[in-house]
Length: 632
Picture 1: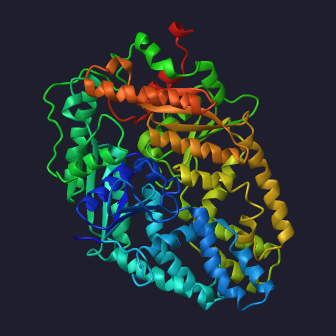
Picture 2 (picture 1 turned 135 degrees about the vertical axis):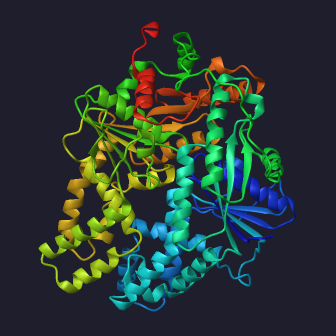
Picture 3 (picture 1 turned 90 degrees about the vertical axis):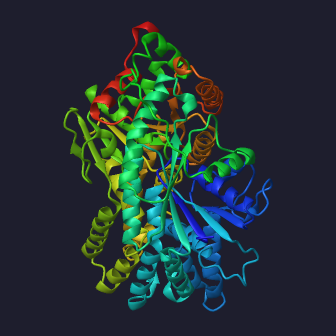
């Protein structure tokens, strides 16, 4: 066995969890004691294995030698706080314990707690751990958040060292109580950098954005002195689908990108074809596990031309559009959720990674701008694909997009936002007359990795309350991280002011917070002002993830306003048994979307190639949102 720890990463929606689970099954079938752990806040392991898993190491019923665990951020936080506070309670008076407990009430404690639990598996002491494993597989969150996770050992070690030289305080408690954590993080970092122990597997599909994200991620890991990379190129169109022009066109597109992967990413790789159904359940996972052992698979060779244009409109005629829209709500109901009315309209596109949130966001923003609405398109996703889809550069500040009047776009850079955020908060403290000693303590608290999340959130709020826009379209991070972002305003008084304003006048901070964020909370909860659009493709995992997210948002008074079903195979394309099987699967789940969600449904068809560039976005927007006389 070459590696003890295997990290799976990649752009959302490329099949990362499926490949991680299949790899875990592969190792287990070969007799190795295997554990698969997910660090994704929106975990899907239970859905793939079709059994409950949760926050404890759980045996997989159908497969010997295989266990799984889904790290739950809330439970990890309670465990982390207990480990930190219990020793303090035994030594210090209740007043001091209360101060430390208050310090640990912020959202960054949740981040470090989940991370801390993750590092347990990298530095586990076999003498104290009842289970021992030959292989530990990590199914991580989509790439941007994975890089963030892997940066944390070095960042928290640095933060603790700086705090030790100053006040001895961090945003996760006194340094005296977390020295063991510092040692553990140093050990975790050493393990991650050891190519003999740790392997990074990037799952990607033969598409431009997926390739670029993989390249960026590998560059970042190399900067962190992490190496030993392998690729799984997933979703390759099989020969059984090539008689269908739509899939033949997509296969032709894939051939170009497979050549790009071979030249730009010269790492060991395996290729996996697209299956005619979902990858879930132990039987299908065993099938995929056996297929992973064949590293010589190649893409089909296309020698004929394919007669479809970018949107496949010679196949999807007006008559065909009627069939394509059969699962959609009336156009008027869809437009009511995206067009501004007497209020500015703020649209949040949310969902599992890889479901097409960025495309849906860009198509909607471009269409709104072309209707004359002054529109801001914004992303909070660390992967930041707006520029890739728009085909133009997108920076940290709103910039007007050439070629589309009334459209501006921006990509929040968390690191830059954090720098600006620290300066603003410290300047504010000085204006309030706080002593330099208190400001120094505050600077130490702000010099922590979690400040980036706080700062990105702060920038999000700036745009949310900014005047002058008719429509604001948010392309959000994948579901779990989106929920953390959207719940922050509601939790402000309990969490954020403790972290950010710990050394500033509390009453002033509280008044500032309530005035600023009360407006945002009201906006998010008001369906006349905001629409939460869940993007998904018609399969179990994205539907279940969207349903869970909708239930969680309902607890803070937010309801979904629009469901966007993406990658729907047009009925006209069902000309082979392979395509017919996938379409039948989709029809089942399209009906389930309607049953689970009390919101209008918009369907976006599977297209012959990637959606990118303003011309294609404009055409797709007209196809989706313009009235069709034949249907009215």
